[in-house]
Length: 401
Ligand code: AMP
Image (cartoon, rainbow, N blue to C red):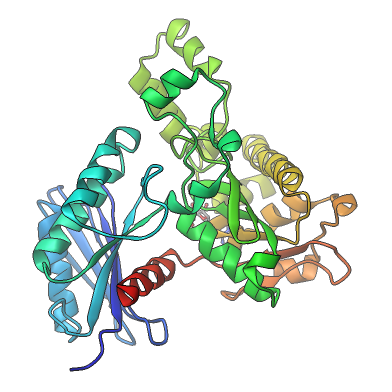
């Protein structure tokens, strides 16, 4: 029998599932795809086989189960079906692992129960992740299903940074504390940054700036996360595409008491109608940059507010780490928006931070240094790869067990 070296990675959202089939021998993507608009009258499946033409089909997916079955059929058509003996595990992105899940975990009934217990702190994400696991389990009951948690990398954040300064009895009763998210990306990028520097992760202190539609910063000391900008939920911290990031909690009371908004309306406002979108009407940084370049005042303000918050976190994490060896930009904005990287690091020479304009303007999918050789802190662009990290963690776990 051939050795099982493939991992299927599933990222199940409320109405979509992203998937990748990865061969762990060389990290090659054997297939990647997306099932979307699950539960709507018309859904869509986009499937890209390795080296082949992308296939797209429109059909209704009444539930996640039908979506994943359609994915399984596409994989089977490429000769890499779920029944393949080469499949070693299915790795699942699970957003909230609370304090208990500090590492990837093989899913058992008991583990599922615990993930379910965390639904109140991740109502938008964990239910979909649970469905993804249940459906995958039904498709291949004999195969290890591995949960890789977005919060796990942040479970090392010390208690004084993870606690909100609120009554501890109330906080404990409702499990209110800072958990952090995007952990898989922060972990992957901090390690890849050390690699880029030719050093062991244990020797390197890195500030990771994950700037996608959601955005978060983390301070990683010697490979261990010591602080991160997202909190109980992914709302805290940086200015994001549609999320406000940090606001005075008093804003919420004010909007409720004086503005007459309900809690659900405020939730919607801060999560879906704020950030860049709230400030200028566009949540996509490309649009913000284009409009700002044409002199649009709202877009310019949105850009400056975004960058100002980013600079505050760079300064804060500099102080948290004491010594910074590298700052890594990643995700959609971090990897592509040179003006954001330039503005976020401008005039910080006294902290040893500088960016070389020419290196910063290079467009590439590779990890690369953009700071000049003389700078004490290496500034880098390091593309994230959450799927590969999930696959590696899942594979390492099933190999050990
Ligand atoms: P992600 O969540 O990592 O997929 O990032 C998505 C976001 O990246 C988009 O909403 C855009 O704001 C941003 N983005 C992608 N490409 C570019 C680009 N070329 N320039 C600026 N921003 C970009």
